[in-house]
Image: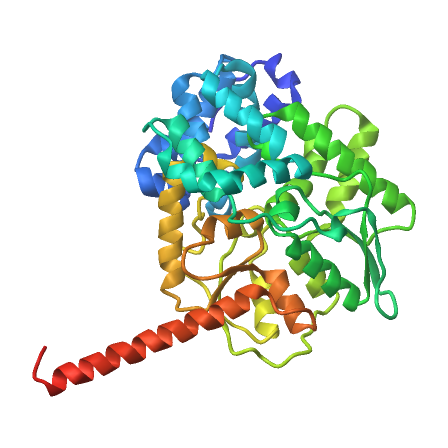
Length: 463
């Protein structure tokens, strides 16, 4: 793709990078075939190729974002399926992140939307605040259907309340900074990102991760000073808040690297993992010391499935006789290129693993997307749940808290991959397993009842 940025414009590092990305695009349109929003809406401007044209025009002319540009960029899930599909290697993630920052700096959103985005930015990255908000949401979720209006603000408020859990888990001890010693001979030492929303919604994920790794001989440290990875703010175009959060993590982990040392920074929420692995790029300009430290952190960051493979995960229990539908989180398969490891680990643990049709298409979670774009997110959720249901599996497993939250309540229990792996290696049985057994028993009873009714009808001559 030809571009016409001026020399002055290209002195800006973000513009120079976007120029390089734009010149990589050859207009082939292969990205449209795997774009969720183009799949649903059929609008070229809601495809990666269409958005690239909009971004190019906006950045080249150095003008404020227009309502049309904002509409189509906001509809992008940042699922990055286009990056997996693209034969030319267009780094769409960095391009759309630049566009979002430009939008937030040049476009004034409606007051209600500004307030909602500020609220999300002030709550979700901070566990204490988020926990308090969820406790209010537990009471409010029953009244979601009573919120009046058919506008976007009303739809977003209803979506927020629908996503609130029925109850808020108790705070876990593993949130606190500390060292979890390896059992037996120490084989490695890692830092665990405990995250923000995940530690509130499902503290059992971090607990399972620590139990499993320490049993495998890996010491796990939860560093003081770490917090949200910054992804939620980053993908809303809130550059400065995102960088503050990222800087705190870089400081915490590099201090640990320079102290007792680390073999890896372990991430068990793939949306966070994609961002932390990109810290080197995010800090590439400005202070050289911070750029070097961020690059060191990114270089050792690993998804939990990568770490388990590295340290040769092995089960200690007999195969459970359960079938798992593996949902590949977009941030894991497209953002990090990790596709085989989680499935291989589940199979090694003794589960029968099935993949749904359209495994490459997003479930509609995408960070705050299911709140900010509830209609499209709802359509993608229904589509994904339909494909998962047709696998006939007992459970749905995934490696990202956003996906697990989005797909919960759809009929089959959702559980993090690491919780199943921990169970099969000596940890406690996740409650979702018993739910799956009960669901299987209920289906069996329903099947037996239907067969008996059919037999009786046949005997009496009724169709």
